[in-house]
Length: 240
Image: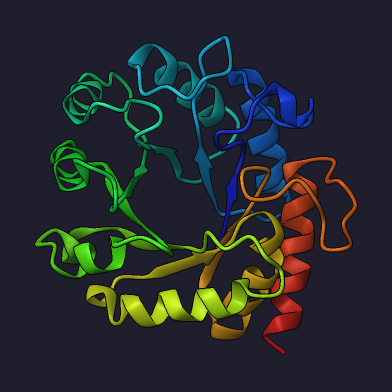
C-alpha cells in the first residue's frame, strides 16, 4: 500500500505546490490516485491555512476529495490542530462527515480517549508511533491496540544518513504491534531512505508533500502525483 499524504502541517510558505483548499486537495488527490496511491491522508485547513478538526472545515474537504476518488480518505487528529484533549474529543463527536480513518499520535495527551471516540463513531484508527517518544511503550500497554486499523511507524529522524537505523530501532520497539499492519515512513531527509527500507521489508509506506518537498535527487517535487510515481519506482527497486 502506498498512502499519499497530501499536505500535512505545511502552508503557503512551503510553496504553491502544497494543496490547501478543498478544491486543490481534491485535484491533488485525484492526480495522486491516478499515479498509483491507494489511500489518502489529509490535513483539512481553515481559509487562513491552519490545521483544523472543525466539522465546518473537515466536511467540505472530505466531500471535495470523495467526489474525485474512491480510495479511503483519512485525516489527522494531531494535538497542534486542537491542543486541549477535551476540546479535541468534542470536535470528533461533532463531525458531520466521517473520514474512513484518522491518525492518533499515541505519545500525545488524550490519545487513548481520542482513539476510543473515533472507534465509537466507526472511524478506523491509525496509531501514530513516533520515534524518539514513549509512543511505542504506551501503545504496547493499550487495550485499544488490537482494534486499530494499522500502526504508523513514523520516523522523526530527518537525516538521510541515520534515518534507516532509526527506523529499524522504532520497528524493534514496536515489536509485534498486536499483529496489526504496519505502515513505515520517514520525513524530510529521511523520507526516501525509510521508504526504500519499507520496500525491502515488504511494509506499507507513504509519500507526499507532508513528508518531503523533494525527489530523491534533491529536485523540488512538482506535485504529490510526481512523488507517488517516484515512490513506486523506488519501492519496486528495493524489493528486487
